[in-house]
Amino acid sequence: MVLAELGGRISGAIRQMSNEIIIDDRVLNDCLNEITRALIQSDVQFSIVCDMQKNIKKIVKLNDVAAGHDKRKIIKQAIFSELCRILNPGKASFTPRKGKTSVVMFVGLQGSGKTTTCTKYAHFHQKKGWRPALVCTDTFRAGAFDQLKQNAAKAKIPFYGSYTESDPVRIAVEGVERFKKENCDLIIVDTSGRHKQEASLFEEMRQLSEATKPDLVIFIMDSSIGQAAFDQARAFKQCVAVGAVIVTKIDGHAKGGGALSAVAATKSPVVFVGTGEHMDEFQVFDVEPFVKRLLGMGGDWSGLVDKIQEAMPMEQQPELLQKLSEGNFTLRTMYEQIQTILKMGPMSEVFSMLPGFNQELMPKGSEKGSQTYKLKRYLIMMDSMTKKELDSPNAELMNESRIVRIAKGSGSPVEDVKEMMEAYKRMAKMWSKASKGKGLNISKKISKKGSGNMNAGQMCKALPPEILNQIGGAGGLKSLMKQIGSSKDITSTFK
Image (cartoon, rainbow, N blue to C red):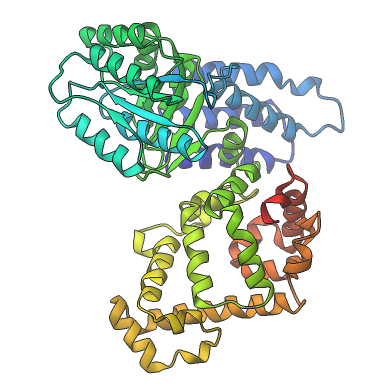
């Protein structure tokens, strides 16, 4: 993933510094030099990196640190603060309000993913209760309106555009006026892709801005653009009042440091990141949790809880908890739980939100070797089962002939179906113990305030050993569960 290698190198430099017996200027310089190399090789602009290094040295004056103070912690905190400063310009972007019409204009380079991101942005707000609408003013690229039309229809979002009108300003004005009359409270204007050498297209963008008077202009930043990011982003900022940045293609394997440069050039915050091609692969960007994950300093509990809430709607939770508290764990329950897990996104992304988690633990290689692929295969196997097989809590019902039939129906090896059944038996056994009070007494524990103190023994058995070790064993897990219970009333998620 974008920035994963950068995060690994920065956290590696900090770990190496922490392992030194004596922390002096030499150790500090070695650590900063390694971080500087990592940032430059990731396409962060040289001047930004130099400023960061100078600022850290101004903050960290080892000779002035009083005896007994943790120099490692002081250095780490200074690095954290400077990376946050780069990504946070110190001012918040415009936030749309429900019920009040807001116009948002998207600008950016060709191929940066503007049209797809427009729909993702609209879909995100639609789920939160807004009434969004899309206006396509891209008359330059063939198929642009068709792309937006297809995406909008899929997400059930109203749209406007024209196959015959060649004037993008006229299309924009007509579209915005139409959706204002229809009481849409979030009107999103998609523009043509352009770069700073195209003076005519930049003039067109300025005219669009003057005609639609957007409340917010969002610059779409392709994370793989490289060193050119700073100059291009600055050119857009000089032409129109860019107020926010969205970074796309962050799920790729490019270096991604150009995204940091774009923030510095536009003096505007990153508000969202695109993490994939699908409509739901779109996340709110929060600076501090992001940098903490980058440095391996801790997780993002609030982000993890948001994912859980989106994947498991509140109205479904009592029914599920009742089933589990009764020990009634069937293959259908397992099917629903796998669907919920897959809605949360890639496993590496979910686990990266846990404090202390190391991305290197996630299996590398082809998609077929991933945990996500295996879970999807489980769903296909269960799609080949009868209602009786899915709803029966009796695992012994699945005899050899049934397993062979399911394997043929799903196009899977018999061994894979048996492996899935073993996974089901383990989960059913765990929840059976929980319902009898031997583990996670759900019906009682969930109702109590402070459910972060749930029995960690059963959780230890459920987690893979390598992940449990990264968290810090059973003691570390108990500590994390206490954090969950105390952070922004997270327990309300499970009530």
